[in-house]
Image 1 (spheres, rainbow over the protein chains, first blue to last red):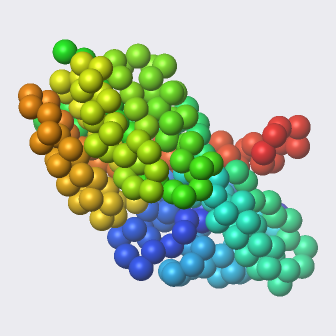
Image 2 (spheres, rainbow over the protein chains, first blue to last red):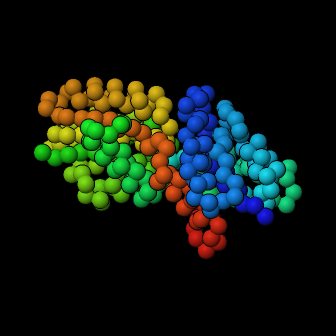
Image 3 (cartoon, each protein chain N blue to C red):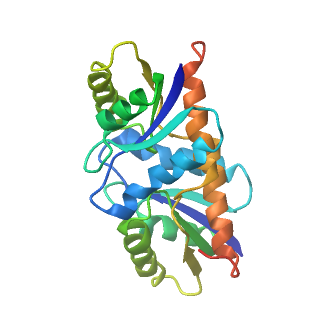
Length: 127
Length: 127
């Protein structure tokens, strides 16, 4: 009865840009709240949503939560990702899934903005 | 000797997408760490970087910190925004400025992902 968390960004042709979601997946995985945590991409890079979902199900996931790794509530987060997840999930019987709100506006983002600003003031810290 | 913080996203033709950075600016402003906090857009929407910087200087800012409101360390965060800020700042003598790292990978983003996932599990909470 494993629970999986998929964190899905847009995906980019730039390799470095595709690394962020995997790095955040590692941070989230370390929290231990989900059995399986996978970073994936809506398009342009692997794994895509269908591949990540197959991977999760292959590792025993029966309950999958998908978080759009996007700041603004645009069409990708509210339409494209839910549609792609629904399509992918239709290939796997008995899997429950949901797509959450995107990162959106949240006090944790405000904290992170201030954190980046503080780092840039401190001349001894790496930017 | 006012200190200003500019939070700069990409900018979009979709009005709703442009609201996020202003909403985060309000959250950051409420923390009281900066005298002036302005949400701005790299392109496609107002205020742009030059307008926001003029606004800040007009309100007494002599020290301006610019945070790229972007998840991945792409060209916008590392090249375009610093160039636009340098161009805009060249019109205002005596203003010190710096551009920080983008939001990037940070444990606060991991926390926010888990927060969005928790909200989506709870049937009584608005998604």
